[in-house]
Length: 464
Image 1 (cartoon, one colour):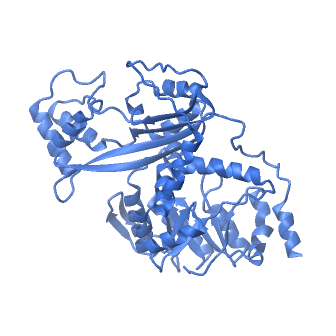
Image 2 (cartoon, rainbow, N blue to C red; image 1 turned 135 degrees about the horizontal axis):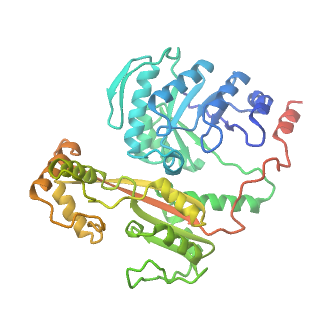
Image 3 (cartoon, rainbow, N blue to C red; image 1 turned 180 degrees about the horizontal axis):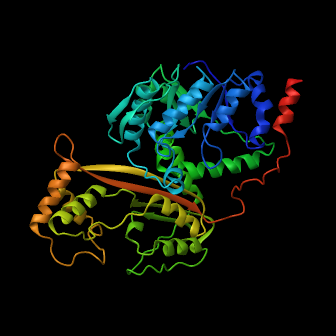
């Protein structure tokens, strides 16, 4: 990969059916483009458009930005990359990344856990597999037994990793050839370069809105900024880039008057007047709600049009180690399993619930937090100190647990989930969510075929 400035375009173009884009793609090098990159959301996959582009021109570098490491298995990623490397020898870059909780969990039903470890292990596996090695290895996040590409690519493709935080940027610099960023301004490049070092290529997707209406473009940009930069991963990214103070008043300027609503009982009927609130914030409370769909529906009714819901809750794999250890110990010592840890809301279900409640532009993200303890009893002492974090399940065991069962649980926990220094790990998945009450000003997809200008005509005119 090269440090020379390059200009790319995202394929496929949304304004034309894919088979009709041949002439446009073939003309891109004459227009100054050096690269064509794909994305993968809810339309075309990351590889098929590039396979077509490889046949339409041999003058573009092709790359995926990105192919998900959770939605594709390691071996399938290697096969996809080897195929593209054969179609475009020496000019294909496999860009991979964790993708987002919505895509991974809500749309594909796959658990998104330990993204850093998964990214590291996938890069290590891909290096070996694309070099033609037979891979049998127990990585931290997955295991491979006896896989070998047949045939391996004559020229292994370059690898790039999507990264928003210093740790992932350093990982890309150490194990990949490039780092893919998002929402990056030119003035941000030195900060990322300082972490990545001089030998790692930086790749960033630049969003453009070709319209003569500056107001419309700014409105679309405002919505996108609000949707993305309130997500913790992007907020942390831009705080690291030095925009923490600039972004801090973003919500304060929008919501100048906030009324606190205090619930005086355990009732889940919220005393809220319809369309009375501009902002609803919930901090680590939704995991204790019995009727979460009902509460979200009440919040939707209480929000004024274009009002915002921001919330954080424990979900996903929270306390999975404790859950597994108790289950194994009780099965062994008691002959059955009793509910010990309250079920956690699955990320894909949270996204569906926001839509079901009638909220618009939902964004969800997960921030895994791993806390270490001396032993399982220290963890449970900490949980009891949290008040509501004890066992509140109706179907819980109604008699005291036997000492032998508790000791066995602690042993299993230490055997399965301890670090080399003997301390145990406890996972807390903090799920962040944002959604808006619908409003006519919010961006909506244009009707297919409604474009007033043809990119194909523009390219043909340029070629004349």
